[in-house]
Amino acid sequence: MGANTGILDWYTILTGVIALVTLTAHGALYIAVKTENELNQRVRAVALWAWPLQFILTIVGLIATCYVRPMVLDNYKQHAIGYLIPVVVFGSLGVMIYAIRKGLDKLAFVGSALYIIGMLVGAAFALYPVVLPASTNPAYNLTIYNTAAARHGLNVASRGGSSPWFLLWDISLSCSACSGGR
Image 1 (cartoon, rainbow, N blue to C red):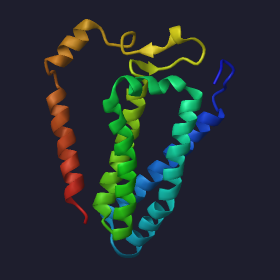
Image 2 (cartoon, rainbow, N blue to C red):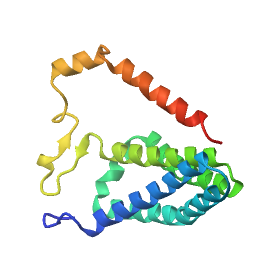
Image 3 (cartoon, rainbow, N blue to C red):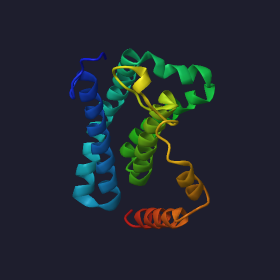
Image 4 (tube, rainbow, N blue to C red):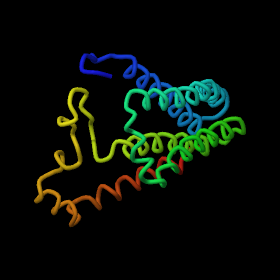
């Protein structure tokens, strides 16, 4: 992308559009799980409308990412297990369209969630150990090594601290969200 990119360049706009379409479909599917009758039909229509855009934008985004940063494929070439990530991404898109057409709202929503998780895991896998690449000089990249917390903080966190309470809170919220609606 070069050193002269601004805040908004073509790649940033593309990824923003991918996020917009993805989250529109995901939100529509969430509302479909929670509603019935006319509103359910309308939001399922939104998700059905968004699906082809999401599919095409996923492919375009992958091609654009490989064009902008060819090195994102390095970790995939070195660790074949990474090729399962695109299988999850495109498999979840398949689950989404199947479930939307069959009226299986919860399954469509889970497929959408797996798509989002797959895309995020794919990006992290491709960039590892870099967390945030610098556009000017690779020496300025933020990596897992130069962004890690201090040793004391890592030790406290690894012994538990308050993290089990947050885990229980997350599980409780997830269970209550899935138990309501259809």
